[in-house]
Image (cartoon, rainbow, N blue to C red; front, top):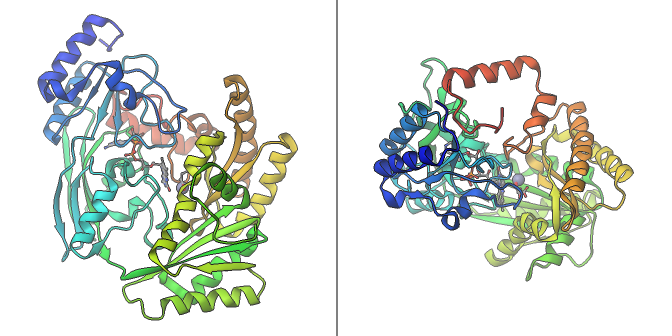
Length: 476
Ligand code: FAD
Ligand code: MLT
Ligand code: ZN
């Protein structure tokens, strides 16, 4: 019998969940559930029969066995910082939210094998700190690192600001532990760089957005800790110049280039207007800015290297102005401007977000055509274009007024999605670069994936989750 909205059945389910994880591990009070049923962007809202918060993999397994038997849909949740609505239950009130936020143990840090083994509910910043404490470095870094979990990072295959040098979360992962929808535990917590014993199962679960199982543990790769960093902020007239600067820095600074982030003039203006104590490092305004970082295990000559490379770029007319940070405080204030864009957008309006990937060589021409398409349809709407340009990942957003009606929001979103995503497809890009598909891009996915790709994904989903209880309505 499928789980229904019958209050008696829900009460029974709740008490069985309490039996597994204890009374304090199940939240049924709507006030206590509030955080778990609304997303960070304020766009996704839902209801839940219960928020269940296990402490161990064994408890997750028992919860999943129960949900499998009772056909209860489960929405996995980490830090709830996702940007695609993937961690929010629907409005039925029949889904259980399974939060990993009490699974916070770091089990082992091995500086010789360069690995860290942890529960999925550990906050990303705590993973970074544990690596630092043994003189190593875990490079995944994003604006939400103080509240997102490593399990959520895995489930979304998060990108962030270090992909240019170290890759996405997928590339930083050696092993996984997963509780399957029927409660069985797959222990793949291996810290190996080579393991060709058949299909790479971990890669199925990374980026699966909670649709195939609950990630409960992980073995991550660690790296040599950089001795420090040099940060610079540049202003440029054209996006193609910023792209050429990227290429120039890759040639001159090689693997020391550890971040290359772009912000349009409108993105920076939004931040300085809506967030206190956020000031541009340059006096003049420019159509485009970039935040650049070099890092190395040996700092000797690093600042000179960046300064020389930027001087050449000015002589060649690629950039108009630049500031190299002279202190860690100056570097942090540059990063604050970049990381502030998400919050400034939430304060300023309702953004129609496009999280797209393109070949780096197409970024400038794509932006020109996309700007034209938006201006033709909606000449008054600000375009907030920024992103991880070193990875070809643009956050090409269009800002609607804060008081936009929900009908107007829906209509304009549909028009903008079609215009932007069609163009992305023309350039052989991806409509979902790093935030995941969730509910936000679920219909769009069907429009752009081939029927073969959709068939393969649906077959995998059916094989692993025959009762279709894992995060229904998300991704597929
Ligand atoms: P949640 O939001 O809780 O969940 C996200 C998805 O993963 C959902 O589908 C959920 O069901 C699933 N899930 C969560 N945990 C598990 C688990 N243990 N097992 C199975 N499924 C699970 N993202 C980037 O990629 N790059 C950025 O630069 C970036 N910057 C951000 C900046 C800000 C200010 C904010 C608010 C968000 C940003 N994000 C960014 C988005 C977000 O932080 C990431 O998607 C992050 O990986 C989500 O982690 P979480 O723990 O909050 O996951
Ligand atoms: C970022 O790069 O800042 C993020 O992915 C968040 C966003 O798009 O708002
Ligand atoms: Zn991003």
